[in-house]
Length: 90
Image (cartoon, rainbow, N blue to C red; front, top):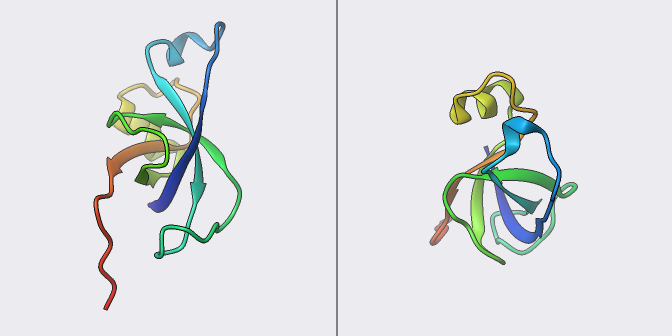
């Protein structure tokens, strides 16, 4: 799993039938500080109603992501599984 920041959304009038009804967001992996970018942005299916600039927990394993959505045919590699309220690193 990765910590990411929501940086945008995807609007699509035509998409794969397995993606219908799913909200797609653009997320940027970040360091534990929640600010410093770490890696490339990606598109993730939102399962927790995340919003702009939210810090989120993303599952980025293709098979696991499809399992979370309960659809082995859905073309997805990342799913937002939680909104992070705070990170405490001693």
